[in-house]
Amino acid sequence: MGGVLGLVLLHSSAAGALELAAFVSSPAQSQARVAMLDAGTEQDAAFLAAVTDHAKSVQLELQLVPAGDSGPLARAIATGKEPGTIGVFWLGRRDDGLTIYLYDPRDQGVYVRELLRAEGESDAALVESVGLIIASTAVALRERTELGMRKVDERELAAMRPSESESESESEPESESEPGPEPGPTSSVPEEGDRSPSRAPTPAYPQLRLGLAYLGESFNRAAPWQSGVRGQLSLVVHPRIRLGLGYGFLARARASQVPLLELTRHQLSASLGVGGSVSPRVALHGVLFGIVNLVRWRGPAGTGLRTLASVAPMAEVGITLVRGLALDVGIGAAVPLNRFAFVVCEDQALPCTGTNREVAAQAWSIAPRATVGLSYTFERRASRSR
Image 1 (spheres, rainbow, N blue to C red):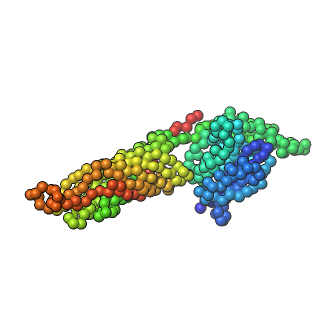
Image 2 (cartoon, helix red, strand yellow):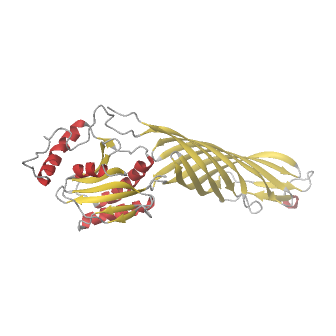
Image 3 (tube, rainbow, N blue to C red):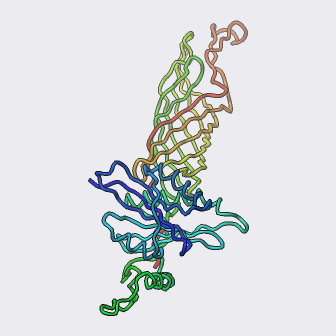
């Protein structure tokens, strides 16, 4: 069995950057951990707090570690050679924001994610983003899925090389009797050779989403909860927007005891969902359904069919189980647009008014509604650029 994921955050004051080294601990260790050098600055403490919060969501414990003297990339490469290391992160500061760097020892590649800030804005606005990105990327490293970061090309690596070479030469004095090897183009950066693409694939839209769920909805006091099933076909047209069509079936329920009235409902719906991820595995959407109920009724006078239109706002939480597959839980209400009553006439020969008219059942003006089910999204990725 594999070990558990851990992260190590380091800080280099000389390089002006935070560094985060991820490793896999042995199964003998009690739990995963995240370690970060305490630079003693209020600014770095804010990033530390954000990483701590998001590390907890992927079962990681934060631990402080001492800083080293080597530069970010050289130290990342050295850390990547240690057994079990799955990645090394660090943050580079710029005038217009931050850059998150990642060295992946599995393919000896360097990846970046750039975060910009508005003019005059402080790092505070970027703190939460940094914590979320680092935690979600750590999960991707652990599960060997797409990282969502751009792979740097040879020119960018060449631009990083001089500063790293200088820091190495300062920390390792030459020996007269046994001079070290001449510095070469691969002395401080990973060899790329004829490797791959400079950009990691990003999600492409639209994406197809299929769902199957339990459906429960109230009709009136006599039928407080009617159960059934719902199928949904959706298009995710944007990371935060999805459009759907669905069909629901609500099994027979008694809407009135005296006189006896039983209802079976078929629901055709169109929906608009707006929302997105709130953590690496949890998403929250607000969904608005437009529903046409085909209500099949059965009573003393026989059977019939009525149409009931409604709108149904719902809050839906999605919890990712495995890549593409999610558990969805929704709660909301249905509001009828053409509310009507089922009426029984005691004497069919007389006008159905006054004492000869009895209201058997009428739909709630606001009816509770809930769903629980599974959905699968057929994810698409953009082609890698060379």
